[in-house]
Length: 149
Image 1: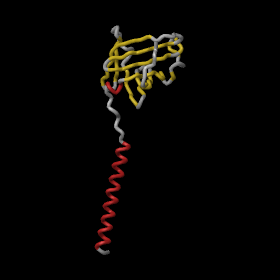
Image 2: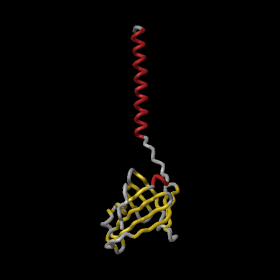
Image 3: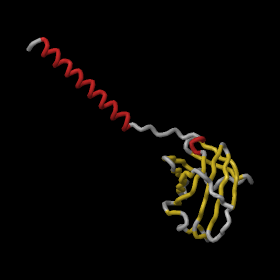
């Protein structure tokens, strides 16, 4: 084998190794998607309840009411919650504070009453899942809070 042929063979061998390393690195970067870090500010915004325990709201019966419509605005450490249940045509407004510790959110209404439970938070794209031992609530992020008067 001539020196030129041997040098060309070594160059191709090095190029194959480099290409393989680059390909494996690219695949590792694509497949190792990091879970987003959950921070209070990642929860800021307007959230509309779309389902409870997998049932779309408006179809699930909640005690004596037939359906539910809930809007939640989380900002800083405070919240405003708008809720309409059953045949009631008016929304009730509730305010208070909330905090996030790790993946758990808890809150207190402005009258001092604690939320019924603390909730495990899962945030995926524009969906917020709040899970407690008794129910799973799924909210979709909205850009605008409608006029709920």
